[in-house]
Length: 332
Image 1 (cartoon, rainbow, N blue to C red):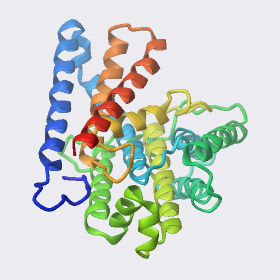
Image 2: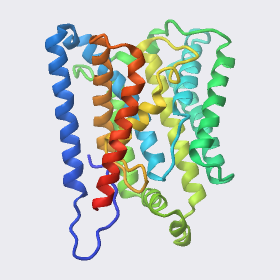
Image 3: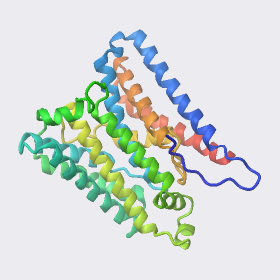
Image 4: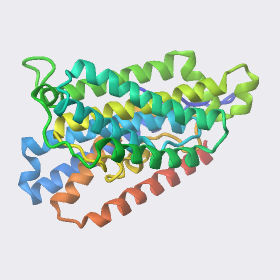
């Protein structure tokens, strides 16, 4: 699956995005395997099936918010509210399960619709009121986080119903040991790839990321496109929240925000090859980057590295990814 969209090369120049993209993905895969093997030698329990499954499911959550962040960053934006949307949807999903006994097939679309509405509000702030994305979503980060505390009323989800737990841990296809969330991430990735590579909407996202004024002059509805991008971001963040509470069986008022998921989503998008300046995204790289970051974070836990260093490490990875991306853009 190739999720990269780049500008067309000039006359006499050959496109080099694909080899570089593939090299980045291969490098991330090799680094991930190296970390797994290295930590596994030091801490054999790191290689246990339960821990490997936990890292995969954590990567699914990171992958979903990473894809949502990829869409936004491609338009030269940023969405800091994804962690708050994730937390609010996880709390709503969990409480619907424990207090209202609502079936999964009813709660899932309801919570995703909630995420889409919250994301749509972000898009309205960015596209119509012209508030810079980082300011607008920083404000809604606090707003949505506050709504989570208000809705939960101090309660927390300790255990979800069997149907919800099966959604997070059971295999979708009998006999095929692939958890349902992994299948969900693959489907979302394929749909996102199709949108970015084979639909007019994807080309509009690229055009806005390269030059929004030129895109407007070319007849692209910049406002509607941005509204759609942030709506997608909210819906995917909400979906990630549903999967989180389904496989962990718990949710608190600080779910998402307490783990700095917004920084992690930015990290996996940039590590995967999405340009911070917009106009280029790599969905496959984002998914591989989510696996890499999930493995690294879990490895730090097994190596008993103090938790206060986790955010510093994530920030360092973002800086390195931005620096390498800037050099790549300068060379091209």
